Amino acid sequence: MRNVEYHNTIPSTGSRGAQPERGPKLVRMGIEIGRMHGIEITEVACGEARGEMYKCTGECADENCVPVKSLGADYDTNRAMAGYIRNEELTNYGEALIAISTSTAGP
Image (cartoon, rainbow, N blue to C red; front, side, top):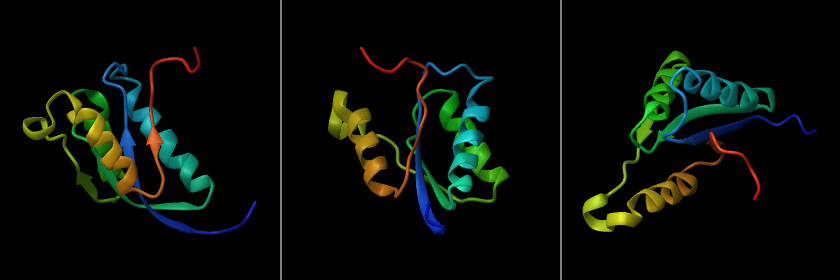
């Protein structure tokens, strides 16, 4: 593995269905895994979605002295597609991604 230090904006997207007590642990784990791979997180971008993940992502960023960029969905303009468009904007904004899901992978 290369020993390279990355400076990254990390968009964090999560599931509204995440159990509140698990959210902070999952976000901290994502940040720690990034650091283990030489990724220095310089900013966290959040989508302002309802639920615990948005709140705990901001708290975890504050704990690590990392600024937070809010990229909320524009429901007035994009209606039902607003959340999907916001998630795409988040992934395009950052250089790496912490994605948290409470569902299982695969079919």
